[in-house]
Image (cartoon, rainbow, N blue to C red; front, side):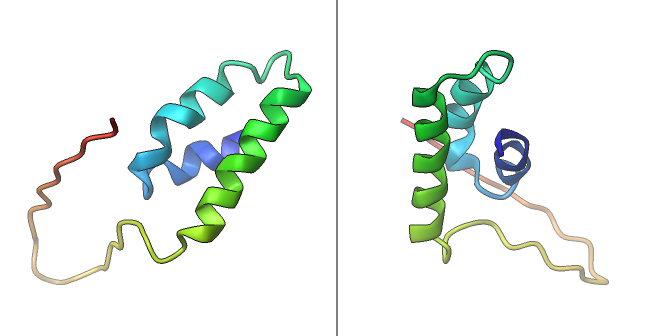
Amino acid sequence: MVGALQYLTMMRPNITCVVYVVSQFTRAPRTMHLFAAKRILRYLRGTLDHGILLHATAIPSIVVTYFDAD
């Protein structure tokens, strides 16, 4: 589950920090870490229309991003 969340951080950079914290406990997870991972999934389910969409185009483009995860 945490591996899938790590993959999602490429398209959803707003979850990077919390996924990093949860991934620190993959070696010896406890119940509260499972609850945290499920909470992240519930957040993602509620915000399905958010994210970064990448489309293939013939014209090269430059992506400029600004991000503040506070």
